[in-house]
Image 1 (cartoon, one colour):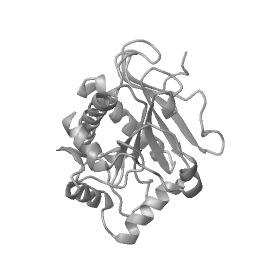
Image 2 (tube, rainbow, N blue to C red):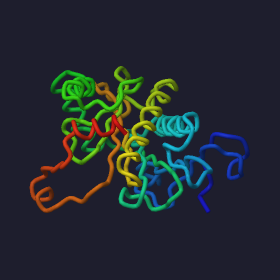
Image 3 (cartoon, rainbow, N blue to C red):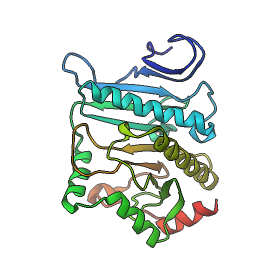
Length: 259
C-alpha cells in the first residue's frame, strides 16, 4: 500500500518482509522533487509493530529510526538540497494522518525563515545558545535528566511540558552526528516520552529536530524539542504573537523528574 521503498534496515529485498526500518516517498508530498529539484518528502516507518510508539521500542530499535533519519538527511543534502527537517508527528492533533508509528523527513532547496532567524541569533551573540539554555535551565531548576544527552523544560517554553533535548557538546548538523551521539540522544528522548506519558497519559506530540543547513558555517548547535499538543491557540495569542504557558517550566520539570 506504500510507494516503492527507497531505503531499509533489516533483511529482505525492497518491498518484502524482513525490514526493521523502511523509508518510502510520502504519497502527499509538501515539496516536489520534479524538474526544478524543489525537495524531497519521505516517510520513515519506525517498526513493523503497529502498536509500539517510539518510547515502547527497544533502545536499539529506536536508535535505528534516528540513524535512518540522519542518513536520509545526509543523502538529500549530499545531492545538493539545502536543508533537511526530520520530525515526528504522533496523534491526530499533532498532524499525523495515519496511526502506524512513523517519522518524516522534508528536504528543501532553501533555508526556512525560522532556521535563518535561529542562525542569526547565534551569530549576533557569538555564543552557543543551546549550551547557555542548559546552564539557565540548571540555574532555574528546570533540568529533567542529565545523563548523556540532557533534557530540560526550557525556561521560555511557549506551551506546557515542552521538553528540549541536546548533547552538551555536539556539532551544528544532525546529519553529521556520530552513531554514539544519535544513541545518546535517542535514549534521552525515550526517557522524556516515558515521563510525559506517565504524567499526561495518552497524548499527541511532535518531535522536531533543529539543525543547520548544508554548507552554512555560522555557529549552531543541533537539538530537538518534544512538544505535547495539549491545547489550542486563543485570540490573545493570535492577536499578539505572545504565547501563554499555564504550567511554569520549573513545575513541569519537577513533575517529570518525579514521574
